[in-house]
Image (cartoon, rainbow, N blue to C red; front, top):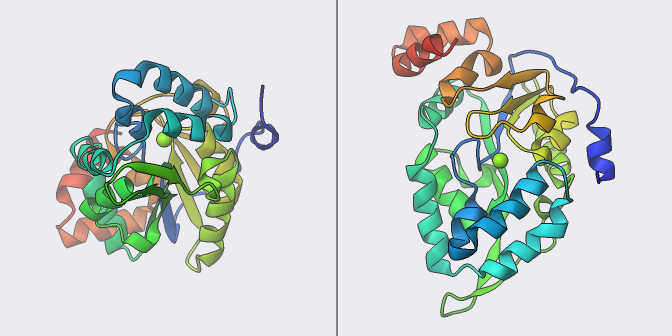
Length: 255
Ligand SMILES: [Mg+2]
């Protein structure tokens, strides 16, 4: 079964190269090796991970599993704080350095995730991504910190919802358009909003997504994204500053 949104994505993505003004990253299985909701699932991990896997592969619509997963897990405030720490611990190599380089080139860096906003915000702070450039799903807690539901109006809980969020981000860009890096079907669905979509398979390679992406990256190191996201003269500018030597060296090794 496919959703109407994924039918639109059956064609190969359009692609044009850097420079870009805005770089957008998915969070789970892209900036971090985690799938946050699976991580919260504890003893139910296997059943929840199966639901996530089916949604990310496009086998079921995201909205069919989003609320069900959270209702079954009912994550407490403390569990979400712990998830934020786990995101930081499981960041892909050179996540922080890549984002620092992009920001040094005056680019807007955003994180757009169907994950839980409070945990993604903790991760974003560690990566130096401003809170206003983090788009994710709010969950609610009562005074005792017990789970009390999620933002059911968030487009990021629905298949195709990332497309609308990416369109708004791309519209706000005045400096060369946007590129998106992500691993999942929800990322592929958002590709029509951006000039370049990079299918990231450094954590999980999803064949359904790779089949339709023009640009793919299989390296489990975000330094490998640098030549897909920056023009040659931008990389030369980074090299001249000396501050980004570790990232540039790793990008060379990943070629
Ligand atoms: Mg992902």
